[in-house]
Length: 406
Ligand SMILES: *Cc1c(COP(=O)(O)O)cnc(C)c1O
Image (cartoon, rainbow, N blue to C red):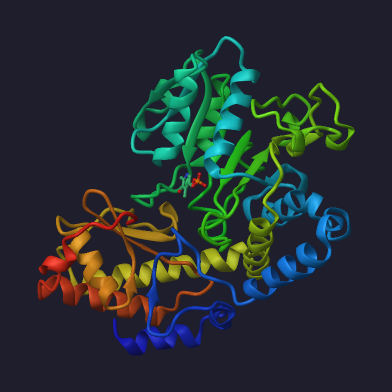
């Protein structure tokens, strides 16, 4: 693989012009959009308009005049086609963590007599911690089983199977159709965390008959640091859904100011407090851009990028251990490698303007956000990685420290 190969692939890339829609710093190769998506060029102007026009000038009138009050539903409806959902099955609110809590609570309410939440060891920490919180209240019981043992662990005590579609560290995917069916055959509900899928990897919640899902706004959807998340509830559960964070914005009539809670219809009852309008407005710009490109084109480019990186790395670094699956259809939009010096290598790459990330204890992770990463980026990153490993350029004291956020 050569730089010319990369440039030829870029010239033939139908998405090549979308890179210009993002504000990427000069001289940086950004392979961490799976952790924090890049800034769309339209976001600052949109935020300026929301802050100065709608807030500064419109003041409280903007809840009606700028339609702030339905923003969570409107942006949810734009995310829906990316994940195989219908418009009114998705709502934007809170963080992934908080939405997990609400939907685990809802599942427990829908399966009286069952307390077990089944997940896998090594799932994203917050997913496991949110079960722990309900466990401490005596409401849930956590059960973990390795991917190959999940089906055997589905017994009559399991209220909910809760898994992340694309594993954040390894990048491997679960078979959503098969596992959803197995869990439902055992009488359990299923919650999919789509944080590393939405906007890069095709997901069809309708086709796999999922009950619930959550996903992240600040990764492939480019909503900005700490952007609000989204939550999905299948329409068949809309009437019965009862979740534990019964705040006033999830009330059927918040401005009736009654003493008793009555849930809003459908997914809207997942709202708890007042939605953060600035955060959702920024997310909307990112979602509009991703929706404009479309998930099929994004997924095709994502696979081509990760395959190109894998081949470049295999050629230059035949001994480097690939942790992610070889088959691009069996992995998300990332590649992970294992190396005892993963942290120092990652620091040395960042010092050269090549940004990937390190996941404790020994994983080097490269994400390929298909909307703005080029094949040339991928080539330069693989070349930099090979140079740093073969010359031991990582072996310097300044690359040994570990930052607060990795
Ligand atoms: C990024 C990510 C989250 C983020 O959760 P927040 O509460 O929104 O910070 C949750 N789960 C998974 C699998 C993730 O990758």
